Structures are given as structure tokens and as C-alpha cells.
Length: 330
Image 1 (cartoon, rainbow, N blue to C red):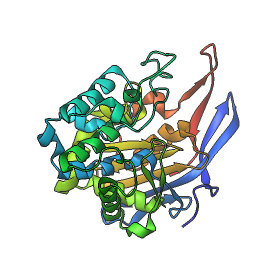
Image 2: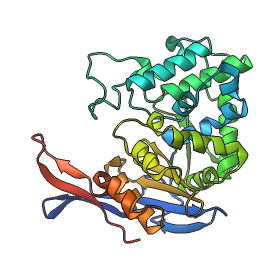
Image 3: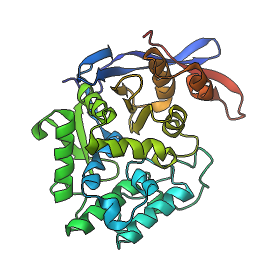
Image 4: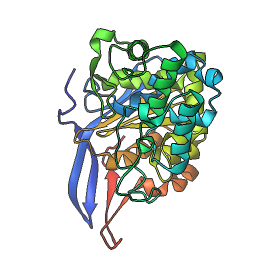
């Protein structure tokens, strides 16, 4: 196992005009349905924190509980539990609705408050103060609280690694990653719940499993792509990719330059990409070039996603001064 800070292969170049100004290095691993590596760039044994890419798997125990039936949660609300959302009005309303249906209050969320992701995208208004429901992880936390309500577990300590719900999340990650619980590092995430440290190849295996149609995981896949606006939001790459590919792919971002994909068409694959310096700006062009190489996206789909293929760099007057491209020759 190599640490995430290990210098990886050249993945992307940042141009200003005709010349390269910066580069991004990192690692890519693709595994098939048999969990064998079919493509690698850099070191597939590089370990990193799963961050928000864990969310589809953190939601799995709730589906096993039939939490939607127990509390009358809608598919959009269930998708929000898997989200790193913009904090748009419809995200906030869904998070509030989950809590209300479960007899809970926003004050019980322990994810903290941050500037919503949607502010920089122009879809959430800038403000002097924000609300906990606008936290990109509020849906996940609302789901965790719902599990506590259903099972009669303590609510005040739901973020602790020793809490019954967090213990079964770790067991779920162990099951789908192929690692023993003792092989998965556990620390504190940005939203205060446990975060998991494991090799990229095992992360890719988790997403290859998500791409299968096993009954216990099929619903997570369907909820995410069918409610793509809930998983990220307006103008976000995750949302636009899932909408455009219409069920061929589920994708989930994680902080510090992690991107994971479950591919169903033309064959099941799991993909994990890590940018070594943690900057996610190069993720879209890398993902799209890789999906083209793998035969996942068509020319028509690429045209629909054109702004992500070679993202433009604009200055403070909105003048295009550069671009980002994928440097890998797959």
C-alpha cells in the first residue's frame, strides 16, 4: 500500500494560451466484474481516504432496513442520502423533509455548516450566514439519524465510530471492498463521521460491485442516476454525466481529488481516479477521455458534455485564457 501523496503519473495539463502552466499527477485504476485490473495508470495500490465517494455504500444499510418504507421517504429523498449536494432550495427541502418524516429536527444534524457548493456555481445566493441543511452532507446525516430512529439507537452520538450504525457501515465497506475491517483505516471526515482509508484498487472494486445488478445494491445505482440532480446539483459534473448517459454510469465525487464510477454499459466496470494534489478541476476531462477509450460514451454524448471535455479557464473578466486537458494516452 502506497500513501496518496506518492507522486503519480501525469494525468492532466493546464494550459495558458499555447503553453503548459501547471500539471496534475495521480493514479487511475479500472477493474472488471471479476474484480481484476483491466487498466491502470500510476500505482493501483495507492491508498487514499474514500471521503464522500463512500456515500452510496453508507446508504446501503438503510436500504436493507427499508427505511423508505418505514418513514415514507421518496426516491429523491433517498438519493439525497447519497449526495454531496449544492445546497440548492430543492436539496434543503428534501433534507428537511427526511428529518420531519422521521420525527427529527435540523438541530440534531452534526455535520456542521459551510459555504454551500452551489454559491460558486451561481445557483445558491451568497449570504453572511448559512444553514446546516445546506451542508453538502446533510442528506447523509439525515439518513443516519433516520436509522437511529428506526432501531432505537442513540441519536446524540450517531457520528461516533463506536455507534451501532457506524459499525455496520464499516462492515458494509469491508464486504464490498474485499478488505477485513482491520485493514481499513478509520479517521474523522470533514462532516465529522468516520472516513475510510484504503487502496484505490479496492475502491475500484467497490464500484465494480455497484455496477453489478445484485439485488442488494441495484437500488442505490438506480436511485442515483434516476435522481441525478439530487446527488450533486445544477451545473455539476456528476449530475450532468449521469443525466446524459442515462443509466450507463453512476459517478460520485470525493474530496481531495477523488472520483469514482460504476459503469454498466457496455460491460460492468469500477473506476477510481485520484489526483495527487487534491485538485478536482482536472477530473472531468480525465473521466470523459477514459470513458471514450472504454467505449462507454458516444460522440453525441460527448458533444452534450463538451464543456467538460476541455474545460476553459477564464479570468476575472470572463475572458478565456487557457484550458485543461487529459494528458493520458489510453
